[in-house]
Image 1 (spheres, rainbow, N blue to C red):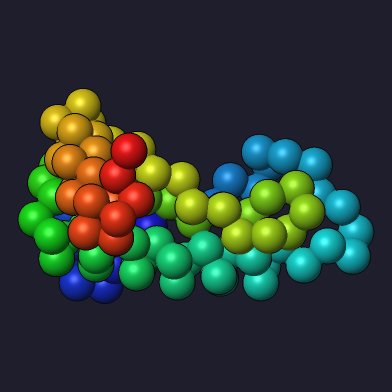
Image 2 (image 1 turned 30 degrees about the vertical axis):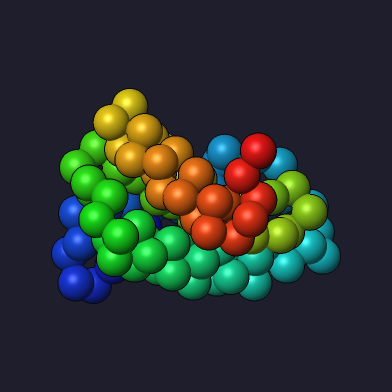
Length: 96
């Protein structure tokens, strides 16, 4: 989802025809939760300097109505995130 600040993340409108909808499942709450998570993740990635060009974050709902965040990265950005994850793991004593 694009943020109102125009952060460079590409947005995508909800695809209401993409799946089967089950009566009684609250897909909207899951999507809202995922949308908040997209904002948090996008902000954290920008904060640590991950290149946003070629990055796409999208909020969605799973079949059970739970929030789902879809992250698409360029190969370079994926490598940046991998390095950051390794550094974080080392700092937390989880490297191995």
